[in-house]
Length: 324
Image 1 (cartoon, rainbow, N blue to C red):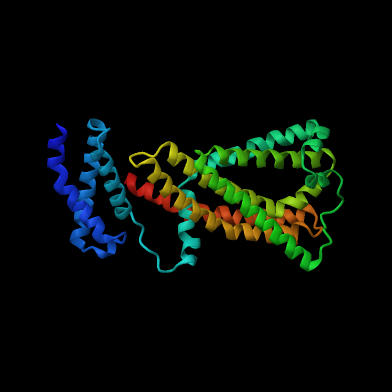
Image 2: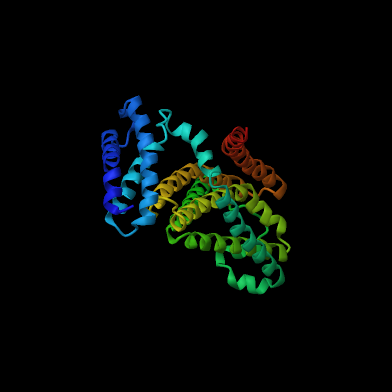
């Protein structure tokens, strides 16, 4: 098929699709029922035309115009219904679905955190002097402290909680924002944090302070590390979209994934607030490790139970229905 014949055959359909997209203006509810059905038909035909154009005429401007049209139409066809319930509905439903949809990125992010943590702990146990020289001064207390109590008082603990929350948000935002480096920056942030965390634990255990380290970290740390893994998964998903955009342009794929990554970061923020509160008012008050474990394990368990029920649960039901 020649280019002129291809254009003459499809131009009327493309013009009609463009007119429907312009009339909708990003809101499919502006179209009638018949127009929505027609929109779906024209979108599928344009997608097939684009596939043919990419194969036969990859360097022609017509192919680029078709890509833009299909991208605009796809955003309209796959537009999610606007939920009038707002933030509460997002935190109770959509957030979990967004996180669960990135299950492979979650596994990669967990591996990028846990493997370096295990290596860092083993290194610190084997060479505590080197680990002590490597770690920043603010982590040296694990080798010599006798209690987790900070002696800050209520006002001081509130300020400490705010500081911890700010730092956690910074790390989480950095993890997902660096997804634009094709995921390399995100992976580096997680690797670095994992190794440091492992080295701190190993140094404390080597100094005979393993119980103190558990008392100081478990209550808030399990949930905090969960949030870091989720934020990193969002960043890795952005990198994956850039590396493998599929039928979309790389820019369109990155923009779509970045929007979801931002929503995941926003939905994770309340859990980071909770982790910061627990760190200030539980982990830094002198409680022994059994008490902090009794707080930290159920706290992280609630998050993972919600993800399993509200996120992965609907996915499993959809797969069962598809098999039937």
